[in-house]
Amino acid sequence: MALQLILGSSGSGKSYRLYKKMISESMEKPENNYLIIVPEQFTLQTQKDIVTMHPNHGTMNIDILSFMRLAYRVFDEVGGNDIPVLEDTGKSMVLRKIITKHKKELELFQHDVQKQGFINELKSLISEIFQYSITEDKLKEMEALAANRPMLQSKLHDIIIIYQGFKDFLREKYITAEEILDVLCQVIDKSELISGSVVCLDGFTGFTPAQYQLLTILMKKAKQVLITVTIDPREDITQADEEYKLFHLSKKTISRLMTIAEEEGIKIDKPFYAENEMQVPFRYRNSKALAALEHNIFRYPIKCYEAEQENISIHAARDRKQEVQFVVREIKHLIREEQYRYKDIAVVTGDIGNYGRLLGQEFDKAGIPCFIDHKRDLMANPFIEFLRSTLDIMKKDFDYESVFRYLRSGMANESQEDVDILENYIIALGIRGHKRWQTEWTRVYRGQKEGELT
Image (tube, rainbow, N blue to C red; front, side, top):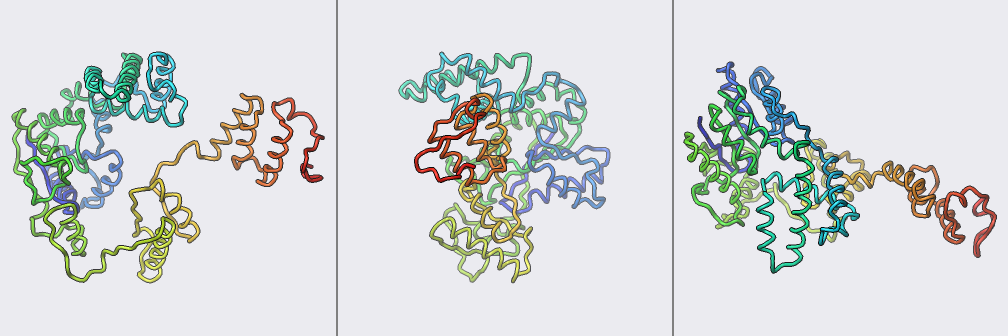
């Protein structure tokens, strides 16, 4: 039982050193298990990194898991997951049913149910409530504290009703994905996989209450727990700071882990720094300017980098389109003149909602292949709109809106010009309903061109 923190600034090689250490130890002690836990989205990349770094090009006795994969690995060993998990689609259906059932009790949300995206937002809220172990009593306490803020109090009142209804529906029938770690904590003591294993956690910026509860058990059962935390080596990890400071969350995480270890009587090994204060982070070893930026950004006092450099440049543009066009020109220059490949280039933005479509359009015009990492609205898919409008035509008896949603979905094999002419005719003569659409149209309206609808 021991806890060790691997600390260092961004790009200092924390993950690399951790993986090297695990690979070396796993080869020296093949009888031991080594578990590397990373966020769900990083499991495949971490597996690739381990396989690439390993002399035998395999993971051998090293398992790369997320918290969820760890849970199911333990459940396969000891059981405990007999209750089915309610997935996102099921959550949405249950929430809609609960809101309909309790509609008269709601003060603020009763008129929002039909708004697009409302159920998804509510589902995310309920998921976070479960994830951070917020109880009904805590919500009621928050409601009481909001007495002088009627809007907030009404929201909390409605959330409590929906949350109670959701929990009543789930009781002894389903669990949510956020509750899986709670179930894991109840059965993990029986697991032989964890006993005697070395557990590493990498890539996390912080942990939820449920994850801290699991970490407490892992620290007590495992041979050693190693956790990487991003923090500047110049920071004092024993001193808390204000929430707005750059490394506040890192210090909060370190403090919480240290407190857990002390309370549980777990040995705390000396933190290992992936770099010394004067060293350049490994990621920026070929760029002193980027290293200086990483070393000084959002930190005071700063030390200016005065040497000539070509690694960082700032350009101003009149609008988003000009920005994107500049990016296109730069990419073409890098490909043609600097011998770069497309896979070597990334475009990063903090506003993918506004830039994503524009980037896609301009890259397509320029013949630049790209993958844009953002979620697409399912309702914006032409085929989905085609299916929904078809069902609405049958349900609403060929009403105007449904028919023209169908024709304008892009899947009806009709030209835009023909649809426009037909729409003018339908509006002018008030044609509605299946019966009218089945009769022959012979009337004309004022201003209609001869033969326009034949």
